[in-house]
Image (cartoon, rainbow, N blue to C red):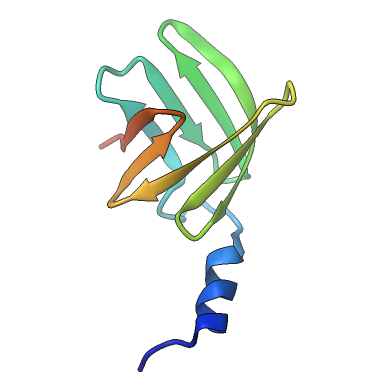
Length: 98
């Protein structure tokens, strides 16, 4: 059965409350490992750059496949999860495999 436009729009705009089991929670890294985004289950993130751990920290919200970031310094950014890959600020980050 096909969903109506209104229902689809509501689902896409609903903020997902992160939890340890949310599919996007966890570590996302660039192919060279230089940038690492740790999306924490409490709605916070910790970004490392090269040898600089916790280079940026803040909060995030996920709506469908869209992610918004609010850095603790006031910087904002966003990204999209496409086919299991995070596209953010011209970077491509992959889910870290355990």
